[in-house]
Amino acid sequence: MRHSRSVSILTFIVIALSIVASAVGLFSGSSADKEKSHPFYTSIRGEQVELYGSGIYKDDSLSAASQAIAQDGVTLAAGVPLLLVSLLLSLRGTIRGRLLLAGALGYFTYTYASYCFLAMYNELFLVYVMLFSASLFAFILVYRSLERDGVPMNPKLPAVSIGFILLLIAFLIIMLWLGRITGAWRQGIPPEGLEHYTTLVIQALDLAVLLPIMVLTGTMLIRRKSYGYLLAPVVLVKAATLLTSISSMIIGMLRAGVHVSIVEVILFPMFNVAVIWCLILVLRNAKEPGQPAGPLSIE
Image (cartoon, rainbow, N blue to C red):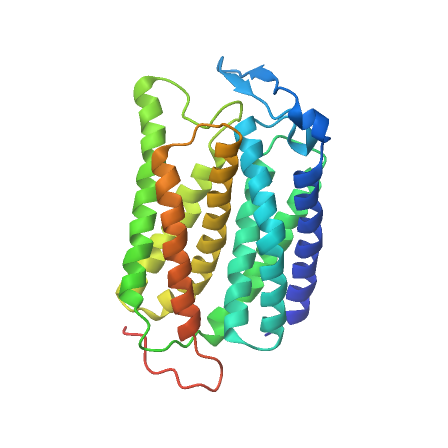
């Protein structure tokens, strides 16, 4: 892989800094502080927001802090090992390794973009910025290498089925987010989850970037376009890691006594299982250099 040294350096930076950020997020604040009642804060909109009140996320809401702590756990337990293993596999020249690496770096890019723009300012701000930057540029380099070399696939891959699953997931999440936003407009109240934050960062990232890419990938897979086979593994790895984090966030929020929509409780774990199944199919059908691939692209 061209630029392998640059990718390795950037990836090791991401691994080291994410271990620090995740460990601080998980373990900062004394157990005595965490057992205290959570303070309340009146937002500029007059909403009473329950704050977490301890550790690095002390100024974040109880809901947001519960989600961040759950995501830190997933990052430390699954994201970092996936990043390390995929880097080692990619340095051995495997296509599957590079696909996993691109997807894992996409997860870290999205995660720390959200930490940069959503989390209340704390002492780890520059760490979040460095993680966002390093993972973004490493992702670009890896994706460019995949784009240049191509991703040969087994013609038995059920591309149309995977494409429809991606479109269905994207459509349902779009409807979920738009329903939350437009429902608040109709009632003349702040949307659920805004709390004392300035805007809906996650919804903005999803509606502007992630979901359009899922729609584009699903459409190209259904039409059996070659670029769809390039995007699909990256999008699926990214979606699988992200949905695993969201499922963990939901569990963390429920344990903290935070209200979670029953629709989200049902849909996101279902999406998680479906995406992981699609990812396994794609990785099993990705052809390594020297293996016959068969014609997949129909222009």
